[in-house]
Length: 442
Image (cartoon, rainbow, N blue to C red; front, side, top):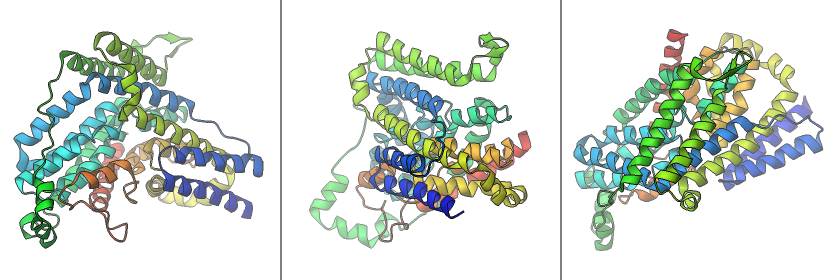
């Protein structure tokens, strides 16, 4: 037991140190933990999550090519038009915009262009930017469990099918999308009157008394409406949306897929084939530059996710697979009485590893091995997002920097930041609603 605890501390220590360095370090430092477990303690190595990694590579390549073609600019521009048309409702429309952008492209890193626009619209309308910005940043990550090409969703389906819960991507989305929208609207409602209005905020008013600060806050305009969107960019978006529709269609109607020995083509391969093919069509017909795609934030953030999932999931699988009987014996009573409590475990692990896909890949096999049913695990899927808790994720940090008013903040005591309240409300509400929907459907 002492050795088991020491090894667990090594796993947690690798995650903690990796999260401090961020980016590629999270996966790389997990490799040190894996090396200590295998070479230092003689544990049998687990299985690296290659299927999930291949899906991420295919999806972010396709999304990155679309961004290189200018297609992402068109999506952002349409979102901006909606927000500027209804500026008084920005606290509700901003999170919905960032949410659906993430749902479309499978990563929350597509919203950096939209965040300054959200802040600009709020300032011009006299709305405290913290209100829409805080919940919009949360929404950009919540959408990951609602995207048909996100690693978290595809991994959930693949692992669930392997453990006897025959669920499809559309069935997962039928639970996660309405649940997460409910969570976001609850968080937006709580944020609607959050903090002091700008004209009553003494800190903000004091900044306005400094000419340089007033010019910085109100003298700049953030917009994409002045961009001319070429026809090739729009064509790339259509190809990307068509690819998504094909994936959802095959997932909903498996009989359309080719089969060998009575077994249809697996969905993880379907996603890879369709996404890579769509990327190729964009290169050929939409003047998308592969070099520009590789240099873009979507592709780069996706590759960081690949390394993170590779290191984290392999290290976690190595530990859990070697101690499965002991873990089952310790948690058997709790799991039988409170199976939903696995949501707390998912959330806490996510706080450490900053990746919803990695949480699913690392923890879902353990949950199934403990005897937790598939419908329960589908119901708690939104709880795999907990990395807003410590505000070190790039989207949160970027949002703080984009808010020229200074109202979106990381607090003096670290945890009293602008994302805590909307994050807890959104994830809590989403998980409860998803659990109820999953129990109702399954």
